[in-house]
Length: 158
Image 1 (cartoon, helix red, strand yellow):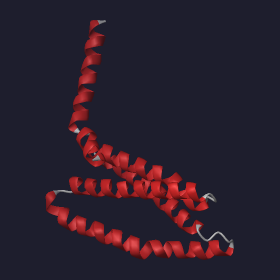
Image 2 (cartoon, rainbow, N blue to C red):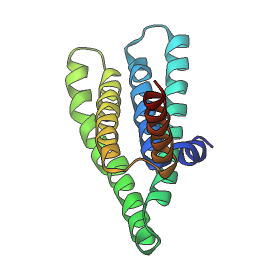
Image 3 (tube, rainbow, N blue to C red):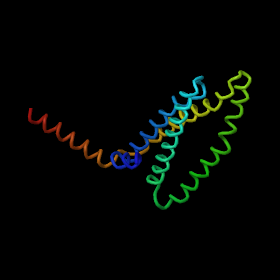
Image 4 (cartoon, rainbow, N blue to C red):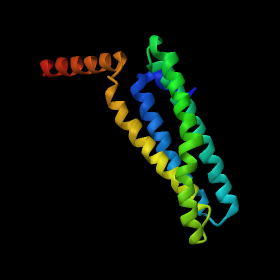
């Protein structure tokens, strides 16, 4: 639903901006492992899971809208292959050294939080940089033209 609203009102650029904001919103919730209070840590963990799941849904919806029809099948296959590779291959490898290092300091749950926070910061940066490559939508261009016309008419009347 969020992806549809963003797509209708601002196009891919707005959807990417919202996607970047969602990734940034998930960063503070990623510190759940550092907390001593189990209740508050559980609430942060559930919030983290909801925000990351919503980010995945919005990202997939954006991907299917932005990619042209001729390339969509191939690109979606690459998207899911990359997601599987990162989820099952690289994420556990990135997590393992952090756990070994954290176990030495008796904080064995902090490795996951560090990997999650780092991944979300990196994701937000990549998405925000990628939004620069999408032009403003036609509706936004029309609004800018109208605003310029109104300004010009106002200046001419003065």
